[in-house]
Image (cartoon, rainbow over all chains, first blue to last red; front, side, top):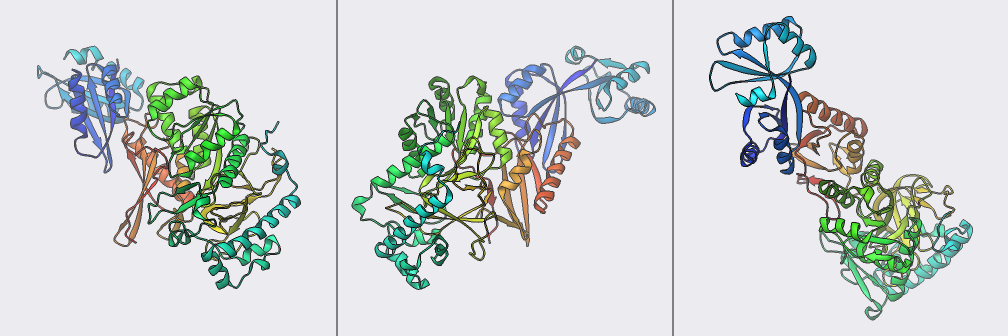
Length: 143
Length: 435
């Protein structure tokens, strides 16, 4: 129940993000979710896309450093306290979050939270046990 | 078994070698005093006459020659023969002022090609080899100097010169190049292009690489050997002394390059005081040519930093070895009072797992403070989707550089292939300080 995420190394230079999105668009790759983590000198772009392999190869061809990591996509109801509930569970289960980001799907009923934990197996087990829905790659793409 | 080009002189007991050197030195000094006015003037100013040279130790009585002497006598003022005896000239790039020009007689070219053949034999090359000469052809001594040595050896020369890297790889595949001659930074450019094209170096016929013309670290040697699947050996030379083939690493020895002492007399001096240092100490390398006709030179200060190794070598050659040049007195950066050689930074980077052999050092002066940024490309091997992993990598490199050099720098991670690739000599340092 893991989702593959593409991470791209970015120098803090103008236009780099635009280049990446244009490159992906030219190959008809759809971005489902993204986040940018940044420091003073560089950033890391994290992307959930509908075709990971194709996105990776096209970005590599265009000279970007690309990595693929597994993340967990958790579905929660899009209403006040939705995120707080998951985070409370995470705290109680003593899971350690490396990073997270979120997006709301088109229907607007549910939000999807993307998590990277230091111990992914433990996190999946704990979240499923406490009744959360973990989405597969196919489900994410179908949203 | 060791291969020799001229076994007798290469394995001569040192007493015999020194007697040849002294005879040649006396003849050289007498001829230069007579025929080259600027040398005569310098010797007169120093109060030394040719007859004062009675032993090799008397060499220290003679004044040094420096790059500025060549510039002051630009272009042909230090030539020791009439121009109609000069059959070729070479010149340095002259990035900092006028180029320096050197000349060769027919006999000089014969000496040079012979020494270059001797050097190639040290690397195990024979007449059966297909030698890929990627040194630049032209005014630079590398290309043509190596070229005629390869022909003299009787091997086949591919005069491919620098640049057009993809075509070079096709040629290596189709012509089955067995020996590569290039600058080490260009060798890495070749390796990287091969990787991008999906060419496996193991599928090539390359066996050995002869690399020179720029300082490079031992870790970079390992990198070149691993990436190209070859044995990488060092060649040394400079146009002011002759060109490539002044000294050469053998396959058998573990360290250093044999100086062809029957033609070049080495000294190691303290670059600040000019004093000759005891054997084995590290300092600036100085050469006196013993056999050159057109452009002989006395006590030329190379600015290269090395030391001389007099231990016997496994290969059987008695010729003294010079340690791999790790820096130059003039590419030494002084950062907040600390001496920094780019090769030391390179050594740290190449010793860090996954770091690519492409880097650049950028020096700036902010207020009264020097800053040194080391730009390192982020390869897939070191990339992570987590900021903390990348930051700990740059912190670790920073700490290692601080440990090795005693100077604080900032390691800047940059995108792959953004640091300019070498087509010859790599530009490792950008110094933006207005000193």
